[in-house]
Image (cartoon, rainbow, N blue to C red; front, side, top):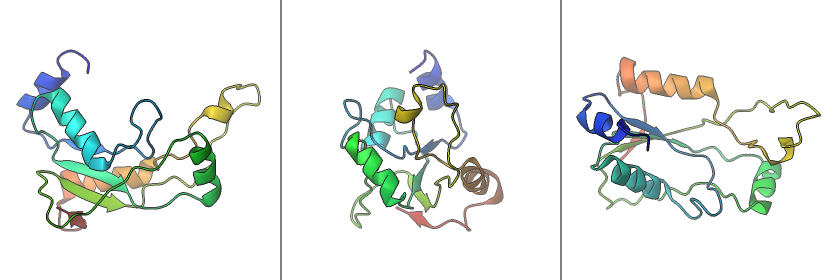
Length: 142
């Protein structure tokens, strides 16, 4: 983490929201679950500091999933274990963008860019609900 960020996160009284990745990256986070990401982030912060995690529960198209599986980038797993104690809340919702990314034909990296993306409007609505409007309108998992 950038110097000073862990300290600032430990000190702040603000709600801390982790927007969970949509896929794992081979060699970096392969086989990470939602809980693995939170544990890793909290470890870097130096204490349990994540209050909420947003988690996409909509599956991408079969075509996209096949493309990612071929690159060994798999969806993040979340096990809703009834007896598991978490000190953060998980907000599950459809956060996938339906928009197809547009790239220039001269963009030689376009074939390896990410095509499964968060929808900024959907994510913004969730964050606003968490942070400003109140929590009663969200389905939580503990």
